Length: 231
Image 1 (tube, rainbow, N blue to C red):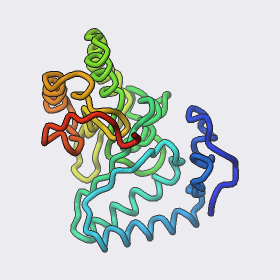
Image 2: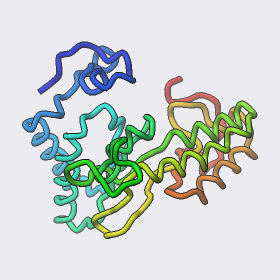
Image 3: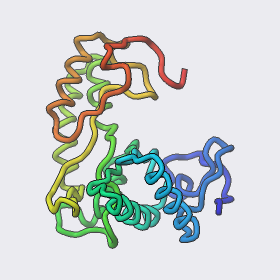
Image 4: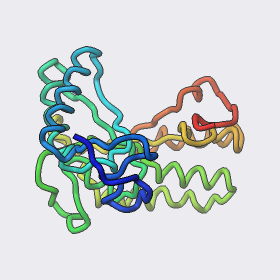
C-alpha cells in the first residue's frame, strides 16, 4: 500500500512529487491504487461520523494523483450529505502554480481547456484552496518595499479566472472559493517584519478581495511576535 521509489527531492518533478518519500522518513501512500482509495474513503467517513466536522483543509494536494481526488471527493460528499451536511467543504493547500491547482479545482481543467466549457473527465474534486500567489505579491510588496508588485494581484486574478472551474454542483452556480491570507505557519508574521499598519492594510485587502479571507491564529489578538512554527 506504499510507494517504494526513493526520496522526494525535487518538488517540481511530477513523478517525484506523487511517488517519493517525504524527508526520507514519511512513507508515501499508493493513493492511485483502488485498494488504498477504498481504505482512505472508509477512514474519512469514520472521521466525519465520529467528530461531526463540516469540511477539510487538504494539505499539499499537489503531492497526490488526481485520480485519488476523483474517487475520494464525491464519496466523501455523498456520505456527508447522508448526515445532513449538504455542502461539505473541501479546500486544498495550493502551494503550487495556478496551472497545477486548476486541475484539482472543481471538475478541473488542463492547459488545453482554459477559457472554454471543457473539463477533465470525472466528478468535481476540491471546492477551492489556499492561494499562495496572492500572499507572495502582498508580502513582497510590503516587506521588501516594492509596492509595484501589488499590481500582480489583479493580473493573477484575471489570469486565474480563465483557468478555473468554479461551478458548484451542490448549489448549481459558479462560486469563486479561493482563500486569501496575510500570515501562515511557514513564515514570520507580516506585522513582525513590517508593522501593524501594513498588517491592517493586508487585512483590508483580503476582506474585500474575491474569495474567502483566512486568518492565522493570533492575528485576531494582534500578535506581532517573531518566528514561525518552524523555528
